[in-house]
Image 1 (spheres, rainbow, N blue to C red):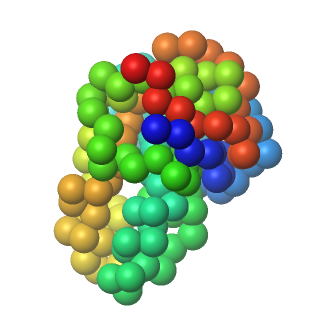
Image 2 (image 1 turned 135 degrees about the vertical axis):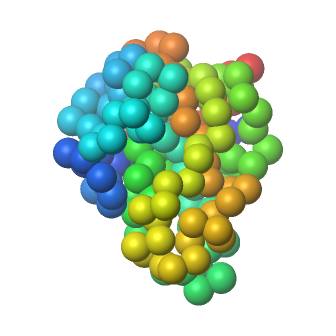
Length: 147
């Protein structure tokens, strides 16, 4: 399974995250990114959040129009079906390798984009991951399942 990193996103805290041209990714996450509520977001097992263009497209067909980064993901991917992945899968993104640690729990703050988004996104909310190999990442990098 292979795709591409469509967009790399960060924020000083909260959503939406905005696109950047590249960053170093460490066990703490994407350089320049932060989460306001570190109790529920961030940390070593949730250092990176993934969501896909395809999931945005599904939501768009249901009447929810959002830009990449709106749901707070760091890696906006294209061409890799996040719904087929499993906890423990490792993915190479650029020079970085991440391991999926859990399905992302939808935050109630998502409802600010649409009153039903928190419910609509259930079952297709993306993933959180820990960083196994630190490295540089930029839009256009390959996203590939490595094991």
